[in-house]
Image (tube, rainbow, N blue to C red; front, side, top):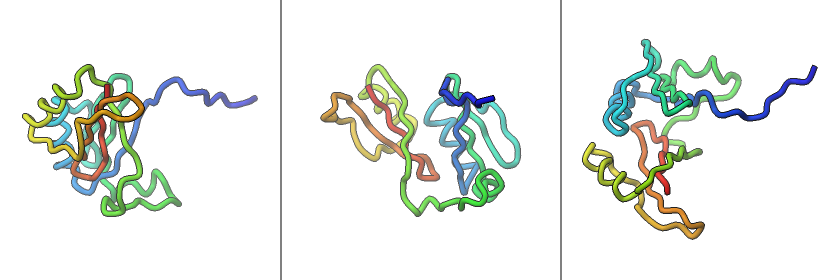
Amino acid sequence: MALNLSPGGIAAITLFTEDLAASKEFYVRAFGMRVHFEDDASAVFRFGDTLINLLKADEAHELIAPAAVASAASGARMQLTLAVEDVDAACADLASRGVELLNGPMDRPWGARTAAFADPSGHIWEIAH
C-alpha cells in the first residue's frame, strides 16, 4: 500500500534554541501569546493549526540524528512568514513590545509589503501583506 504524504497543512515546526527561557519570553512578548505546552526541554505555541515548538538545542540531536544541530552563529537558513492585514501597524505593535526589525516595512518587487525580525535564537520571522 502506498503512503499518502500529500500536504494537508503543517502540524508542527520545531525550532532549536540555546536559551529556552529567553526564547519563550520573546514569543510571549512579541506575539502576545500564552504557552500551549511546556516541559523542561521545550515550550510550544499555537499559531492557528500549526504548533511552533521551541526545543533546547542540546535535546534536538535525537530528533534529527545523524544530522547535526547547527548553531545560531551559522546564519539563517529559513524564514517563517505570517500574513497580516497591515504591515505598518504590525511593525508599530512589534516595536511597542520591544521587538527590533531586521528590515522593513518595505514594498517588494513581487507586490508584497514585508518586514522581518529575529527571535533570540536567530530564527527569522517575516510579516507580509
